[in-house]
Length: 140
Image (cartoon, one colour):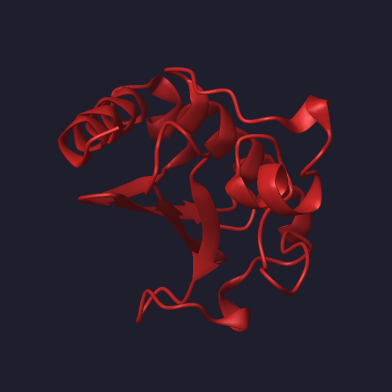
């Protein structure tokens, strides 16, 4: 897929999340920059705990987006930027839930249950799963 079509696809996915009631209910802060989306995620029970998720859409829709937590100040990879009990693996670190590149291509590479399937709800569904993981990891 050419880069302009990829950009249009990403824009459509981000707009769908931005317009959803879930984004407002969860308090997600969305910062869309070309093929990267930064999502501010915080625990609804522990509002003092917030994290920054970086979603990279290079090679969409052929490959799933990459989802990693980063340092909120520098927006760079940082082990301390990860919520408790969410990070899976070390090389590469990632989030093991359907819809993430790390899950589809590294942790469950030959498992048909975790094959990447692009849909218009892919970003929203994956963000909801990650929100659940953050809630569970941070606790009450």
